[in-house]
Length: 375
Ligand code: PEP
Ligand code: MN
Image 1 (cartoon, rainbow, N blue to C red):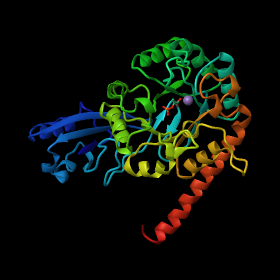
Image 2: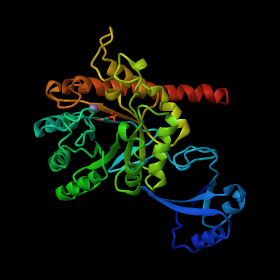
Image 3: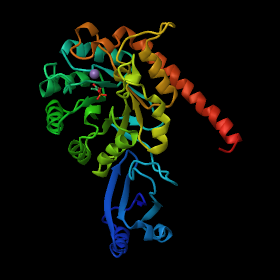
Image 4: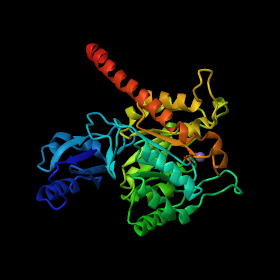
């Protein structure tokens, strides 16, 4: 059960004390306080764990501190979309809105290599009105002899360049909790020129200790990728791990599943799950066409498979696109063969905008028809 408090109630209010006294008298009930600071208000919620079936929802709802009570019957207590659940679906971070209704493109380098390439990428993004990017500093590689990323050493100059080109949010994968401190101190050292969306990659989706540590910090929101060889339910539970530790600013990323049925793509594209995850949870959904498709193959209509699947995800309502670009793909240190070029950036952005327009029109169409049929 989740108790949503009235906006003006804080843990110091007498009404809050009264609610807590009431709850401590109930046997087998534990409480956990959760506060979400938004631009307009701070949302305070009390999660109840234990024998909540015995509690009287109406009685709690009538207490002065309480705005609303949500009974959590399904899975994913914090992130789930429960019956009667009108809680918001998103968050603001560094001036960028992430929700189940917004759309942000994160085009950038799979792996940071040279300052020149990073600068050319960021300049192209700025010239096309983009304020988000992806930059991999810590790369989890299949082969131990492959380039592992420049790590903390590149962070200061990457962040400075981001500041110079108006990049507000960088999606950056971490593979160890010490990377959080490295990112924090590089931000500090450079005067916080940009924001970081911490990415947890598909190889770490079930690294529970990493999830707990990342979930305990509230400074950075998190992009959690779906595990490539586990069920959707297992991956959504991994997201719930982050939330249960206190950080519910989470975006869930689809990046394809590892199965030979996916051939000839690198992974089996799973963007049909965009609306499914929106139904199950309140997380914004990201699609990663690059790591799903993994090639620059083209259909007979002239369009890259990469652009086709991106459009498919966006038409289905995706909220974020994470995509590999490189100024000189043949010189990229990681994943060059799947990178789009800077010349393709305006084409890609326009294609995304077209798909988004189609999604918005489909929503209007749905309102007309579903309204008429009272769905
Ligand atoms: C990446 O985005 O660079 C990456 C390694 O992705 P994934 O975890 O989906 O393989
Ligand atoms: Mn990659």
